[in-house]
Each structure stands twice: as C-alpha cells, then as structure tokens.
Length: 287
Image (cartoon, rainbow, N blue to C red; front, top):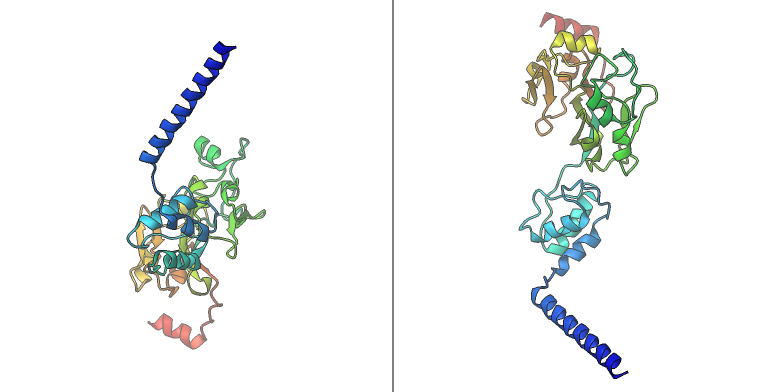
C-alpha cells in the first residue's frame, strides 16, 4: 500500500511540477494581442471571403491595427460604412474608396458564338479549360459551366439558361473577387460601379487577330483601334489585338460605343440614346 501511495504522490508531484514549468514558460513567451484587433474584427461583417486580400476577417483586422494608415485597405463586403467604423476605432480616417462590381467580359451568346462540338466531361470550368479550348470556335470565351456561380457566397451570379453566360446581380454583388479567381478564362473583372451604376467596358477577351476573332464570335473585339482614336480621355489601350478601357481614366462619355464596328463595347444602365434628327445626320456626313 505504501508503494502505491508513493507512486501516486510521485506522479502527482511530477505533474504539478510540469504544469508549473509550462505556466512559467507560457507567461514568459506569451504574446500580448492588441485589444483593438478584436474590436475591429467585431466591426467587420464576418464574411471571411478573402476579398480584402487577407485569409479572413481576423487577419484583416490585425493588418488594419498594425498599419499606419488605412490607405489601400478595404472591406468589399462591408463597404465604406464598415471602414468608417474601423477608422473610428483606430482613431484614423478611412479613405473614400470607389465601390466596385463584377462584370463579365464575354458577349459570346449561343447566337453570336455557335457551338462547334459538345463537351462531355466533368461539369467544371477548371477541368474543361485544362482539357480543351471550349465547345465553340473561340478558345478565350466563357465555358458556361458555373465555377463562378459556385464560388459566390452571396448568390450574386447565375448562368443565364438561354445565353449560357453568367450574369451578375448588381444588388447582391459585394466585389469580393471570388468569381474572378474561380474563372479559368479570366473573363470576370472587378470594375468601378460608377454613378447610378453606369459602366462602359469591352466585353471580350479574345486576343486573336481581327479576322480570326470575328469568325469565332460575332461580337469579338478585332483590335481595330477605332475606339481608342475616338476616346478624348486616352482611356483605351490596345494590346495583343484587344481593346481595354482603363477604369480610372474613363469618364463614361460613351463615344467609343458607337465607334466599335463589332459592338463589343458594352454600356450599362444609361438612358436610351437620343436619335439624331435628319439635319444632325447630314451635318455629321458633311463633316
């Protein structure tokens, strides 16, 4: 009995000693967390979408506390209101950031981009993109299998059953960027939402030469540079046979839209254009 008691006491002493040692080590090397990190995290929407560029809201909160200014930091889900609350907690000023929204840069509907073959494989864009160029003549366009839809946690993007192209619900899109990362064809882009949600952009990513691109899709950009020549703000670049409208330079004048011979430039949420009178038409022709 004494042997058993001795063993129990010895083991208890060893356990207590080990616990004391571990406690002292923990106290010596513990890292004090800034209490503001938790306050900032509580002010965030807890979406953990990664749209801010960090793995989650906790990492973003820590980055905000450590940063000298909030310039370049933003929560796409919470928007300006959330960043204002974060700034108030940290005693800083939140820079005003332009609200962004996802746009689909492909206008190749079934009518404009006829199918030439039938894909019979895994219903994933990433898989299809790795196997072949697509079931149309355009190897740059949307595959329509919905990886972007699955990636969106806000139910803001869906595949149109008739066009087989993704469509963005503007009232639900938070510009988290998940669909941008999910698309293997890189046809989804985050752009400024614009005043009254008005935007102008080139709805094409085809980099083939004009004739080849046009043969593949009726609304493909052919890199003719007519839009670039028309733009008074130098907001359009032509690279690899493809036009691109620079978001920060575009003033939404829309002069590039009628100048595009293929109709690949999209204008969203603008009022209908006024029809020119015969007198104005004649003046244009004379000019």
